[in-house]
Structures are given as C-alpha cells and as structure tokens.
Image 1 (cartoon, one colour):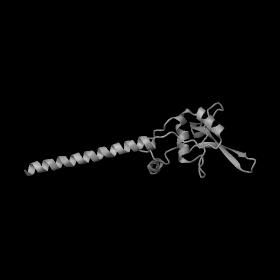
Image 2 (cartoon, helix red, strand yellow):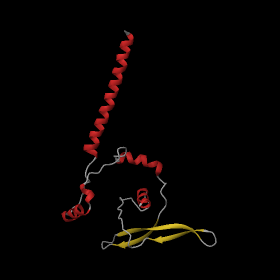
Image 3 (cartoon, one colour):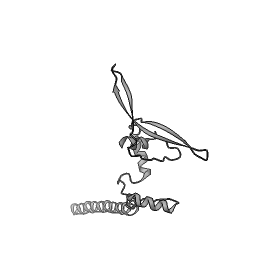
Image 4 (tube, one colour):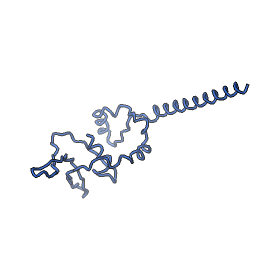
Length: 159
C-alpha cells in the first residue's frame, strides 16, 4: 500500500510541477505577445511631419518583436556589461555648426581607418574619408551621449 501511495504522490507532484511550468510559459507568452510586442510610438508635435514620417518609414506601421530574453531595457543594461569595451575606438571628423540662438551643434563624421605598413615596415594608420555618396545615418544621443558611447561604436562598427 505504501508503494502505491508513494507512486501516486510522486506522479501528483510531477503533474503539479508540469502544470505550474506550463502555466508560467502560457502567462509569459500572453504577456509578451499582447504587452511587449507593439508598434513603435511616434511622438511628433507637427502633424505634417508625423504624416511624412509614417509614409516614409514603413516599419513604423509594423509591430516590433524584441528578443525573448532582452525584451526590456532594464534587462539589457546589466547583460551588456561583459561586452562593453569590445567595440573598437572609432575615428570621427568633427564639424561644428553655430546656430542663430548662440548654440552649437557638433556633427561627427565617421572616418574609416585602416592600418598599413609603409616602405620602412612601420605600421601606420591610413585614414579613408567616407565618400559623399555613402548613405548618412543620423544618431541623436541623449543629453550625455557622444560619438564614442558604446552603443554608437557598436552601431557604426557593425554597419
């Protein structure tokens, strides 16, 4: 009788464990599909500009599906720590623009650089200016951002 009781208890516990795990998976799937996956929100004060952007950038009308393991920015930040510093130092040419209100805008143009050996066998850095026909990508950093920020270097070096 004890063997039967132990058998029933063991299978009952396994069944409850499987039910709990399955319930958690279904709950996470529901949360992910209905709360995490969303169309990007466009916050623009000018309705004409908003309309232009929606027509020009088709991905604004599509739902964004972040990865399952990094769907939240709070999860991304600590997971990024081990890879910080792996991106190379990049060379930029800075262009300063003075604005009418006395402010200043700095544009950092990426300059591709390669290492080559000169005739003496010395390793030197050779800069290659990016052609004007290349597409331009505009990154707008936060208030403390700059062109050597980790996410900038990652985006530029991967592109």
